[in-house]
Amino acid sequence: MTSTAVITGASRGLGLALATELSQRGWRLVVDARDAGRLDSAVAGLPRPDLVTAVAGDVADPAHRAALAAAAGDSLDLLVNNASALGPTPLPPLADLPPAALEDLLRTNTVAPLALVQAVLPALRRAGGTVVSLSSDAAVEPYPGWGGYGASKAALDLLTAVLAVEDPALRVVAVDPGDMATDMHAAADPGADPADLAAPGDVARALLRLLDGDLPGARVRVGDLEVAR
Image 1 (cartoon, rainbow, N blue to C red):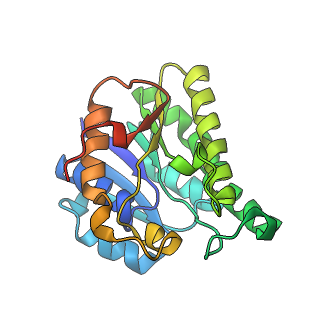
Image 2 (cartoon, rainbow, N blue to C red):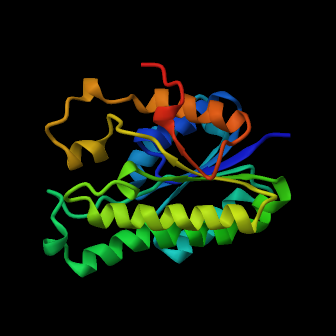
């Protein structure tokens, strides 16, 4: 039977890299992104675009989450909550972070992943599936400027850990992918040299090797795994 995955934020970066790896394995994919044109281009470049359902939209929109759940069907092997917002750039100190911006970050990075889990939970339970929440080292380290984003990811970490306890029939893990050469990292740190950062494809392969085995806990740093560079 063909395995099914839902991957949010799959038009670029780690989301696209994971979609590429799973597509090569012959998985059926449901993918989303806010930019419909970019999403369509990404899907067209996947190894098996015939097995991909693209649903353009914003994970913060309840109607969009319902559409993703409907496209996933009755059995779901993997949900990757990858779509994230960075917030205002340049990254402001907390003294200058507008409360409305923090609310937006929490809506996208914390509330939306939980709501999507709730929407597909019957399908996940039916398959004994896996939930992956993409986190960040900013969730556990007090980096200046990263307060809003880090707070949203810290909250997601806790939700993920509680879900792992409450629903032990599922495999549930928060993953800190480390610093990658992505558009989001470039927006957050324009001066960083991409050559010093991990390639999303390498991180995706390391993450899938982790998921192929036994999870070591409810939170994992990809930097602690073997990542080819």
